[in-house]
Amino acid sequence: MKTTKLLLAGLLPALLLLPACDNRQDLKPDEPADGLFSMSDVAKILSELPLENEHLDEVYDAVSSSTGHGYDEEYRLTDLFEAPGAGVGDNGKPTKAGGYRQPLRELFADYLAQKYATKAGAADVERYINALSESDMQIYWPYSEDWDGKSFPIVTFDPGYGAESNYGYEVRIDRNGAHVVDSVLVTEQVAMERPVWVINKNDDAAFTPLELFVSNADKGTKAGGKDEEARVLSILDFKMLRNYDSWFGGASEFFIKCGAVDGFKATKEDDLRNYSPSITDFMLVLRRRQLGKKVPFSAILLSNYTDQMEKITFLVVEDDGGTTTSWKCSAVVKYNSKSYGFELEIPYKDRDDIVWRGQLTRNLMQPLFDNGVMTRRFGDVEITFGLE
Image 1 (cartoon, helix red, strand yellow):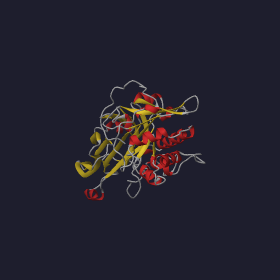
Image 2 (cartoon, one colour):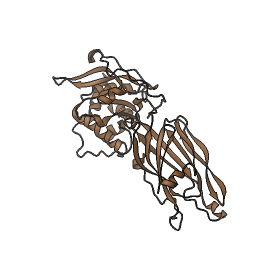
Image 3 (cartoon, one colour):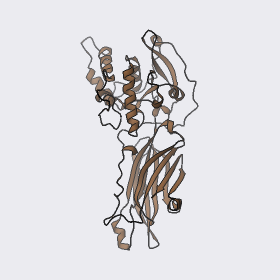
Image 4 (tube, one colour):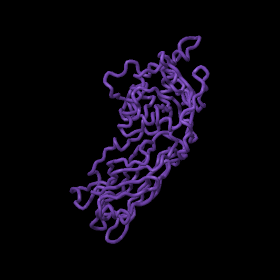
């Protein structure tokens, strides 16, 4: 969900109030999507909609559903227009029975019809909505779990370039029930203290996070049944020691890739021809509030880990996109006191942060065989493995 790689800078003052809505400044411009709307455009539009509590509930329902499926706190505009209240992982099927009295998409449609009406007639609302729905933009709500259920949001957007602050639109209802918008300065500290909606881009919806990742523990088992000497190698928990991107971009998406000859147990040299390496690849999404916390997972790396597997290739990257490239490496097995390498190419993106890559050797993993559990630091993450 990010395109920059700067560390978290010192936070600016919590709120800097600027002139009220009649004299407010426009947000810093960014590139429009499909030549129609930019992220700053969408932030401004969203702040001008006549939001009510039901609309806050709709966004909250969606981001809560997304996090429940292992994604970030995000509500894609695609779902906003096609399946109000649906989160990433719901496959376009909102979970709220009965839906919403007047979903956000109706507010957008009314706004676009009025804002872009021409002398020749009504605006081409469908074209505008299609542009928004297909733009990959979304509402990102950091720290949404702390919402009090009633406070209205500040609406801003990701300015890019690793920025840690931006101007946003503070939406509130005054004592007379009027919809009021002020311009404020937004930092991550502000987002920790009150609701902030960030318009940014979605980059993780196409991937399957661990919560939706289905592992078949017997997938690598050879015919004749599972060997009693083979054991299951898993990741039990994962700790992120730093955030990898600007807070406007959202969570850190870690891709864990493990290459090995799963289930290798040769009894004669001819058996070597019967084995080939495989790659386990899945995504873990760590939200910013999970920084420094040991987050429990249950992810099978190898379903049939044997004593003859001498070296396992292991790669952890934090996703930043780019062109697909690959790491050429080898998994090593041992037979009759001789080591044999199996060549692998593990894909990743050329702009990804490589957190750690190397080989998990038999010596490195020895504590697992002795104790069944091992915790070790790999770059700026800490991983606990289990063997059973």
